[in-house]
Picture 1: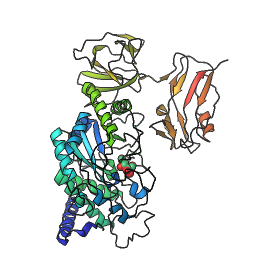
Picture 2 (picture 1 turned 180 degrees about the horizontal axis):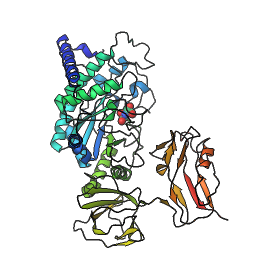
Picture 3 (picture 1 turned 120 degrees about the horizontal axis):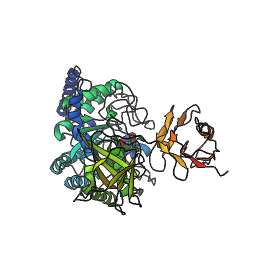
Picture 4 (picture 1 turned 45 degrees about the horizontal axis):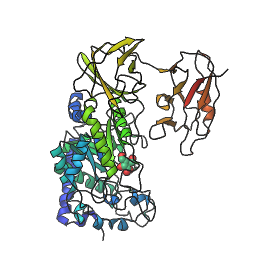
Length: 575
Ligand code: FHN
């Protein structure tokens, strides 16, 4: 049993090539019109508007790889990469096709769950790296039409999304471990000849499939991935970007169509690279990225595809606070689901979608259509805003509710026109005062919401905020979080579970610094967690300018997999 892309009738194949070639030719013709550089900022704004307003979407990784559920020959650490991570020969992997029969698949249910969670768009894997298509493609029969299920999943889901008012989008992998013309082969696939492989013919196939998807299911976003192998070039990325925009000029395409990412970094480096938004993965940029469209995609547990052994589910609280954190930095949040082989969502995922939905029922106004916080940092949470012509609405997202009923907004000089709790339908005004360069709001003693309570503040005229640097706490101590460091060289801030740290610090001449205000000068003890040999470089980091500040570094090895973890803490020295 083998699934050859051109196993279908010769006529179909010719149609396919003509379609693809025709498409590519049109693209070539459209080369004159560079959809990327040829678009006015106003046109781009209009095209991106729904996506920028949406802020929250669902990512779905589903396919043949869901059947083994992460396990192969006793190793249960696999997921959507199982074909490669378990070194499954192509013929062996093809045996999953007759097993793909998700009889409990209910597209309406999926769209309703996304809507319930407050998600405005949904991005499903039309084809992941394994090459299997979730629609009935004319260009291959390595797709759902060859399975006992036969139903066109993209068709059903795009219709249900439309019905629920959720924007349907598709993820499409450039890398293809199944198509004979895709190169390179996996290094362990010695037996799979690449003699007749023709990468340009693969590009025609890729273009042909994309024209099917755009024509039949009208995705709002084309979320490319798998562009990192050397066979894919910048020129091919530019051409594919223009080709897909040629198919639908209003479509939005992520930055993984081109080669702009450095390694697996999410954002695009300087340069003429194509792509409408950056894609940080499994991380949230420490500071916002003003003026740049970006979207953090995160798993709900540890895997993108379904892994039945993975019980590392993030809590609903963690997910809501991540949504707030990402939105407060001007980004979108794409939260992933890995459905089971029967076509249902894991119960743990449904529970979290409903939990987030309950929070959004009250607070979605503080997420949709908002912009990044005007504050560099806030001690109790985050802020989103809706700037107006002569009035600004600030949404204060309070994670740590002040027990003394005094919510201090440091550095805000404006007088508040009106302040109320978003959860309070009667919008009873809260008292405010301006003291010591801060605005203080008198709030109820208990928080309206255990996860994040929103206080709405209406400010007349332009915002007047004094940027507050890192300051010593009342006990004189000062924490220098990795996320606040200004790094020099290759050092990279790494965000994510249990690893907020400065990583990739292998070059001793690289350094990081923090700006902070010393309000209580004096001798300090320094506690720095340094994962390895970089202890010395951490020491030099503490030379500050005028106030005398000396200390000792206590290098404490941390878990081996956490490289170069550095966090510094200053505490008053016990003389
Ligand atoms: O290899 C893929 C992975 O399977 C998953 O699809 C993620 C989602 O963004 N992207 C790639 C890894 O960067």
